[in-house]
Amino acid sequence: MYTRIAPVIGELVSNSWDAEAEKVEITIPETSITPDTEIVVRDYGNGMNPNEINDAYLQIGRNCRVELGREVTKNKKRDIMGRKGIGKLAAFGVANEVELRSIKNGEAVCIKLNFNDMKTWPKEKGDYQPVVVDSRTGKTSEENGTELRIRQIQRSTPIVSEIVRKELARRFIIVTKKDFEVYVNGTKITKADRRLREDCKKSWEINDLPMGNIISQSAGWQVDGWIGVTSKTSQTERGLDIFVRGKAAGSNTMFNLKTTTTQFARSYVVGEITANFLDTQKGDFVGTGRSSVQWETLPGEALEKWGQEVLKYIFAEWLKMQKKKKKTK
Image 1 (spheres, rainbow, N blue to C red):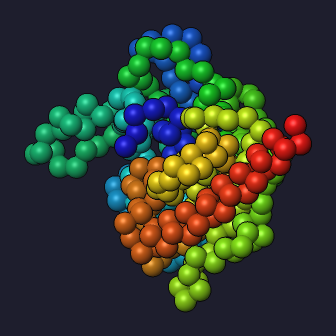
Image 2 (image 1 turned 135 degrees about the vertical axis):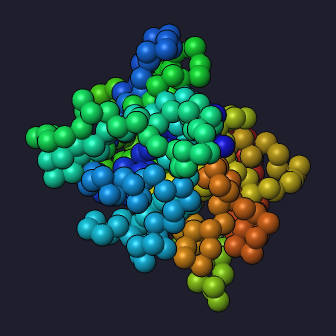
């Protein structure tokens, strides 16, 4: 599920959101990757004590929403992103070692997890035991929060921080909120790193479209967001991004619409759709890798049908604009 750096960092960013952090600092080396290269993600959230690390972080498959009995965080009432309890393993898709250091109320705890050790851990020893880093554990005056250091990265080419910053901006609506600042090598992620609605020659609020924002009245499913058409065409950066609880659930989608009547229009359409009904206590209809909607489910099929009707309308509007432009010229 995780073979690239940006999605891995994205999982750590979503953990920081759930930890009620207001600031996240990501440090990425931009030189050639060596055995000593580190990617560091430091947040200033609630932090964890030893019991919380054992009972929450190190438990695989823990559904925090079910365990906590709520869909929002305790203090800031943010929509909780975590669900399946496996995002913590994402780093092992691109690296072999993760060092976690968490600070809470003046006490720091630092542990090291090694993927190769996990795979070769003798059964007679029971559950895998991370290594406690004594030199970075104990009393401290540092702020609450959690730091992860990703090491033994499985690539040799340099990482471009600008690409990571823009991809994070595309994967999370929340990274441009006032109470959640994310920095990559000291540069803050802003709306300018996302698709800008202002770059569209025409755009529509979802509520203003003839189809409206209701996916299913009886089920209470609805969406919000915007959709627009750009002045310049692109074959790779077009389509709609779907967000669930502030996190991307699909990028550049065309809702599986197959049509040749307005084929050229497809390369002009962009937009952002929020569909939180795809992930609630009643069910999770987003792929495990959080990169695609599960279209072959009732909510997925309903959203797909709605999306196809919306695209047909936008394509028709684009065609009118093109005809008017040609006539004026």
